[in-house]
Length: 105
Image 1: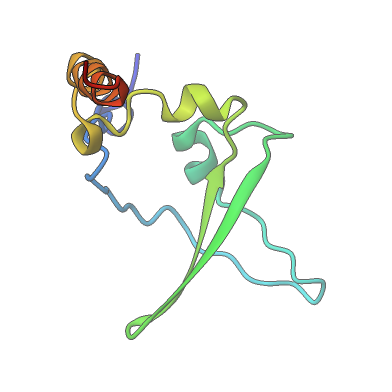
Image 2: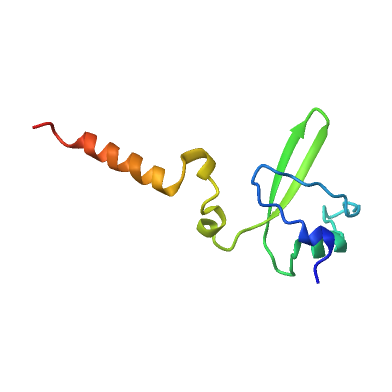
């Protein structure tokens, strides 16, 4: 059975939920151990590839880890509907655009 935290899945791409799950220290070799609670909460496994991004803000620097998608196409499929419209709207736009290419008779 999922815990309340695990059950609260985020489906809105613009929603961010931040939870502090631990603390770590940078070693002399620039290595860190990830807090076990955080790794379990995210479902990460040994061998997962992580993408690292850095954000510099007026409040401080932030380093973010994200599990690398196995399939980028699948990871982003359907995620930009709010930008480009629905599948039907895109097809309608393409049809209208293609009609504009035909020379007028």
